[in-house]
Image (cartoon, rainbow, N blue to C red):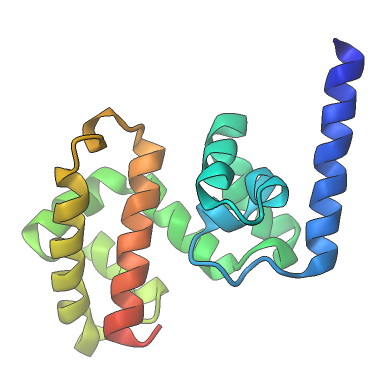
Length: 163
């Protein structure tokens, strides 16, 4: 069994090296799917990358991989993901209200300024409302919910702030 684990670890490291050499990471929308072990192994399958990252170590490697190997993903995206992960309950409440300092900080990380934040926050509120209404949402772990929140905020920032 030890030999099998060692071989799997070796394959993971080999896959990581191949991904870093290819330089393809960092162009996707989310550190949950483009960073860490999951992205190294499942380059073309976002759901598998995110699942692998969460299963492997609750996503901590994916969220910190920019610090150790910036070619794996965007540090700016990692910082935004960490903000959302660490402040998920507050941001969810602020989205429901339509404003708040944590939501503003997340939008700023994606390039929104004071003039564009209101429109982006309105878009986030509508889209996140649809995400939360999905039947499967309640059964998800907070890290999965944070990943979905990240996607919604990032998408609104791209659409409203030109990020």
